[in-house]
Image (cartoon, rainbow, N blue to C red; front, top):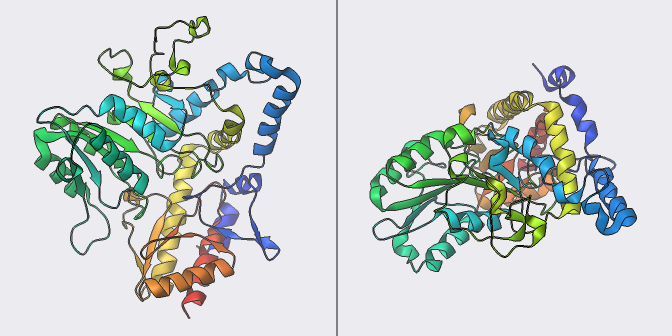
Length: 416
């Protein structure tokens, strides 16, 4: 079935009109970069203006009055984030930025001791994750040369197989304190089996934490049943919350009342019923909200709330179904038209990937950069990751099947 026919039958087609599409030469560009920055919902400006209006008209009383009182603003995010992560509402919270949340959570869950002190990540992890892991090791007086385990693909392969991670976890055994892995690997687009890898970490007595920056809003998640210990994510990629917007975190319910957990505490994580007494002793809110530090930046969160309402209206199952169809079409078109020129380094099995396909040009990185520049000049927005990867992400909320066809045609032109 061709792209025009698929677009005509698409039950989610109308959602595209609820986003601002950047323009190029007077036409909508082909935007395939939601894995880096999602597009702006048209309702975002209204949501921001409503909070500016509350501030303008109510001043400090906006904390307690108006459409959405600010002291309870975070409550609006619990249900949609729980749905997107497969969690209970008490297990999720909207707060801070991704790396800040990773540090806060590792302060509680990375507790090295004699004999059990190693931290495992994937090789080619997103740099901020590696920086965070290494700095945590050094904070605890550990040498990363000894304490950091990095698991890379087998020779000749572009992505890591689950069995390679399992083997590394088992080999580390009693020395492993924490496995910190991505739900979807940012460079290759590979989706990891959170439940299976968490189970393997627990089997050797370690904990499992997850960076969901490229997973939330992209692939189905089931954090509670997968028994993940903790997770963190940003909200400006597939969640369309805007550049640098407020991130989120998950803490499994089994830690809800765990008195043994250390944490870096702040006022907004204090028991809601007594928060405004300004008592000197910290009493954490049960669940993930207890890791909050400061009151929410409401104006920065407003666009994310607008986007999450679109996710709820579209429905996760319909979004996932369309995402699979988009990437299958992209894969098929690339194979048919450019199979001799382009290598897809993302796993071919749909269950092992999300919306992103990562491409490597067989002609090498210089040709890749040149082709990427030509794509940009033609109004195609995707992204380049060193040393030689073009990442392409058709997003089901606002991309069309015809976007995929037009991208492949433009790439073919760029390679001529």
